[in-house]
Image (cartoon, rainbow, N blue to C red; front, top):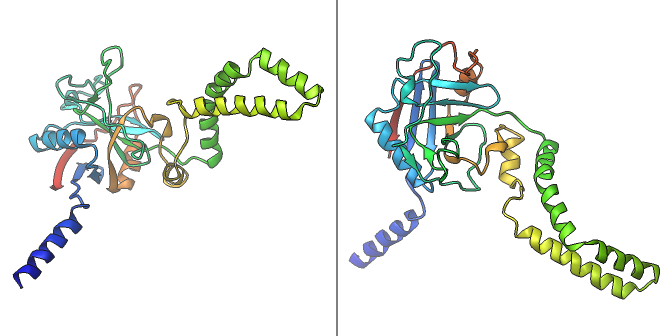
Length: 270
């Protein structure tokens, strides 16, 4: 019997080993509440965000940057008790973490993300966890996503093609075609094509939306231009209508809403 319970406990522990207890946080505002699940594979951002939330760091700050079809951004301590019209939203250089940009976490609607300071003052591109932004975005068509991919990939491929399909190679292929030397033509053409494809596949700057990205961006929407540039460390699980309400607010020339939207962040579970 003891052996049975030992085996059972071992089995249950093994079964639960693959499941993490993801933290859920609530961002409460005077326009409604939102709940977010923090990702466990972005632990630096998760832990820093939880620590600051427990300190009450974000409480009484504002959503100070609001742009319809783009994002809502808040958390900056400079927004606490800020007078109307005052320029706010400065980061805290003491509240930075290394980026944790992962391809399977992307800027779909409701994504919880960390901004960062400009490269000229932040060459390591560290995240500024003293603030956060939530993606509003918009719904995209498949054609729009295709166009985005082509805009990035076509110049890269064109440069590689020029490297291998030189004027000398083109002239040689033309000569072989005119002389109907099919085997020789095919050998050179296949070699050049393989060289082009091999180098293209090794490029890191190409863009290819995953099935998950295409599904999200063409249904709930988002802002794909930000993918790969900023860390996404959580996602909205309730309160999408609150995101919509805040994003629709009228703003001044600095994108600050005329109606203050105050923030309180609470940890619901750990």
